[in-house]
Length: 263
Image (cartoon, rainbow, N blue to C red; front, side):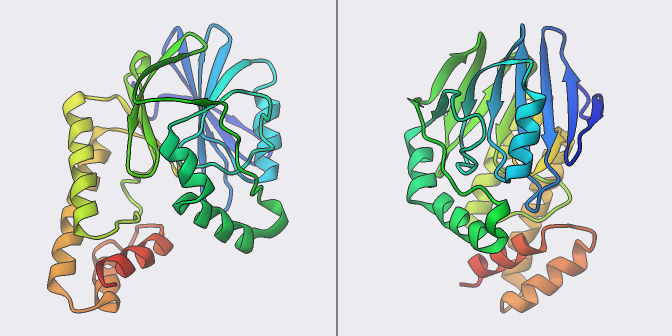
């Protein structure tokens, strides 16, 4: 499946890109919110499973309206625990570390920060997990998913469409990289995607990407490490990265990365 082979549906605020795999459809919801969230719906035989949740009230309402004719069997809540007014009665699935991430860990810190930044348009309520899942295969709504635990939460493999969901990729935007060790871990993960030959890589903050994008990101991460070793401080690091990647978005992520490399 080519990442650009989809049918686009314009909504009032967001946009839905629909990938047709035959018996399975992937609906990729581009929220156009302030943090560029993406939400994914896997549909098979009229039943649907949602991966992640929008977290702004306007998007919650818009996506719920879009889903009204599908039978939503469950929601996988990994890295984005906020937005609990969205489909409140649908079963919520998460690994235990993802539950902690949203309640007490880094996810809670982000929710608190976004609440302070965006105020009443942001939905800070945290989804209540009804089904704690373990790594390995889980079947929801007749669709198989493979759960892979990560440090913060979990990634999701979708075998029927040869795709994988992870938190971030973004081949032409900066990412939050918590130092050289974290960069190496990201590189190893991306190389595993290439080895497995996924057709699509789905992420929380970008439209679906492919293996060429994964290779581009590997090269970026390797270069970030080199730049960090060649400069003396965070300001020099940001200046050099900006010089080499002038078209990249995500300047706030670059700020955070500089803080990690030069704590």
